[in-house]
Length: 201
Image (cartoon, rainbow, N blue to C red; front, side):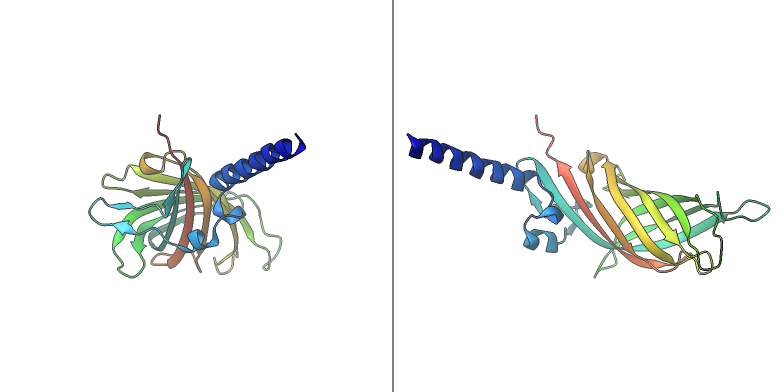
């Protein structure tokens, strides 16, 4: 009887571990080999392919170049950095081929006034990425960044994927952007990890 109970407990633990591995994002302990892979862009469908799909989730990892085409900043008068608003737009390019895979729009508002030249601005940001043949596969990214007011260089950034439409409906995940200075013609490398629920009824 005791052996029978132990066998049942062992089976339950094994099932729990399998379910947890399925539902747990890779950066929280999943397969490192999967997180190292990058989604390829299908030029025919104009969509990214998932790295892997499980029972409950599809994993995408988009690693691409972000090219800023326009950058505008509106600063209050008299000049203060608090409530300064910045907007920039651009293109998403596939690394290696430089093919355009999508577009992006970013808006940010400064919520702090630096006390000295070494202080940074805290910027609340919203990013919208548009992919797909009709720009209907959108991703939203929100968070905040710290920016040097003297050089406009980003010193720290904490961003998350908070939603999506079309191919990315219900998406969540992480976003990193290794950028330098926010100006027109800036080119940076973005790494977007996306988990999309399998919404199959």
